[in-house]
Length: 344
Image (tube, rainbow, N blue to C red; front, top):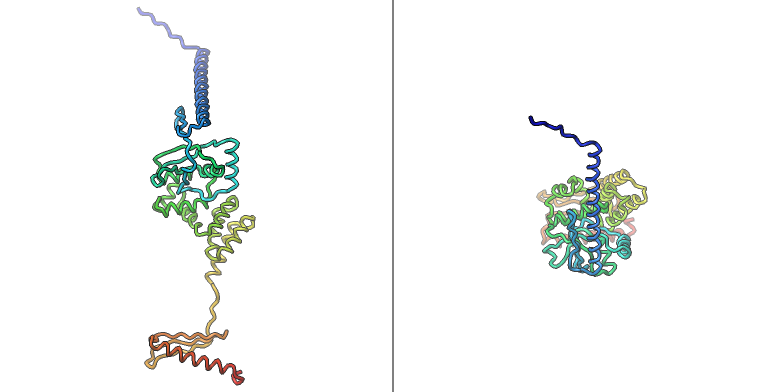
């Protein structure tokens, strides 16, 4: 008879020992991988500093990696659908100073489009290219991505700016209007789906483009104080009362003296004033003229403020000059009588 031995289960100490070995092995592998990445970074930096302007510096050891190339600054053109329109000269100068002390840390993202043959179109990095140009740099590090259409050209830059909190509603206003004008998106609904906003919000933001550029520029410069609610009501005030009044209220907002509710009241007041308009003066007396056959020719209205209005119709062209001469004679005769003492 075959005897069966009872298999001994590994002790808890053995399990812990095995687990420790596995973890140790994983740690060694991580260190090794980290060293390989560090070596690759050193080689990449060395190649870049050596002036490898045409060969891309590749990092294929990690998923989603990209290649960086040095391209000529003069070959770079701005994104035609750049989601940003307002840039601060101070921030460009600060970035140029950072280039001087630290170098370019992040490459610009560019693509190639048939509309710009031989050029690289910026997807993300307008501030960096402006800083490079201000320094007189000849080349700039770039991540070149081909196969992007106009929608991707906008959306990639839009989401990158949103993540950095650089995007404002004033930038959105100009960019969204251009996207719709150029039929990149067929309507506000499609655009709203693309950027994750309600079409009503899209419509309100785009309405800001009716403001003069100097007002939009100032709002963008004071984006911390001027929100969409402020801007939209200032736009209503501008439509109803003009640029001077709108600029006054914008200054009130910047100084912290006007809330959205106060602007709403001001916009409503301007709407009421526009609807009422100047009060018309009613005539005191009226004389009507008819032809012998009873057809109406017109009327003469006399007003209390000394005005007189003569309105005639149905006068044949051949008779108009004769009528003018006769009316002129009557008025001149009447005016001469006004100068005599008897008329006083």
